Image (cartoon, rainbow, N blue to C red; front, side, top):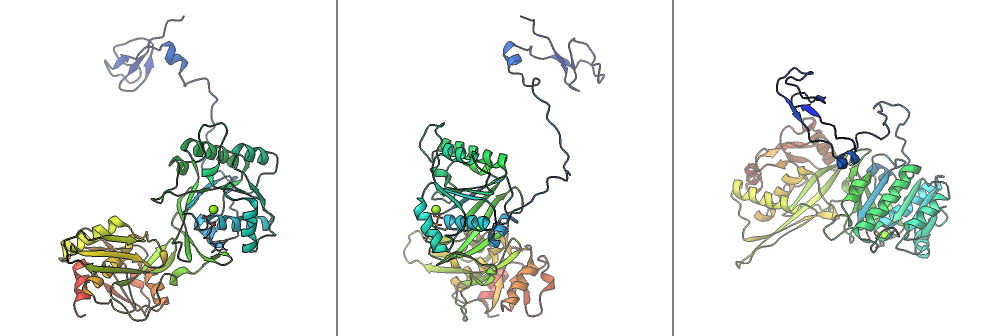
Length: 458
Ligand code: TYD
Ligand code: MG
């Protein structure tokens, strides 16, 4: 066996020699050469520094592979995707059971097929007969979709290998797929990961768009390994309250575009209908203001959506721990706002139950909602309605300041368009200066001022 070579490395410049010297020949420093651990048989065997193929480096500005997107035929779906389907990409779509994932994807497959693309829809949960019934209900029975019911990834890939690669491949759902190469029942972490890996590889190699439907656990995250979210290019959540008509398709991760656009749909008798102008949807439309209700001009991507925030405060006589319940907003954020209202404005909620609801089954993610929530809470506590036809926006800091938010001008204009007359919010909010003439921008910079306005007789 050859004697392992001795190596000396300079601790200053990193140069390597085979002989020890007092001075590094490269950088000229003295006493910096030290011997490295000799190469053993093991490290020689596991040395990855040679024996591979050289990889090619690519310029960033190569002109030939421009992103060409394919439309799903459903404008709201395209919008949520950031412009359409990117060939060779994988999309994971999560959502509560019965929210309409299968319906949306069947409709999208039909549109792609009708536009001349090859659409393959594979269901592991429903028999073809059931899907056919749904298609009939949607009026899509004549769409040339390739429909099959299977749960074996090997069967699916074998079938796909023998035909032209589809433009759109829907797998409904990834949790019921299984691979005979992997131990375990369908839905287990290793099965889900293994099956997704094989399907994604097929999509990337063949330029197909793969849509994986994912089940959602009780806390709302996609069931199965979190790595699934890392493996795919796009993660979408289909949300909404099942008892409400409206559904929101939200983009949580997008390697090819923005994540802040949403698609809005309404579940109707003939499937999902697109709602292209959603700004009025989440308002109650009531004329007389009631205590505890505030309107918030939210921005979803590039579109404003006006939502009604409702607060209810019930004083408890006994010393029982009061409840705090939130629908459609963040629990922790509510706790923070209550604490700020208590610490900075002297309002005491500790003996009150607090309920907060965002109307219409909408889920608010815009941080500018703080002021509207605070206004609803103060109005409910004081049992005084907020001024009629007013909207509220701004982010509340722990110090009780109202901080400027983005798109002030857009919020004001949308409010004015829908007949609102006053907007309460911080000064200097991205373009709030250019308020339309019909809308008065009333500046609130501190939370105590908000309380004075609502409780006082202004
Ligand atoms: P589905 O797409 O099966 O949900 P998921 O795949 O997310 O579990 O949607 C089923 C629900 O949609 C069901 O509760 C009935 C409702 N629905 C309608 O209201 N109208 C329709 O035209 C269709 C097809 C479904
Ligand atoms: Mg389904």
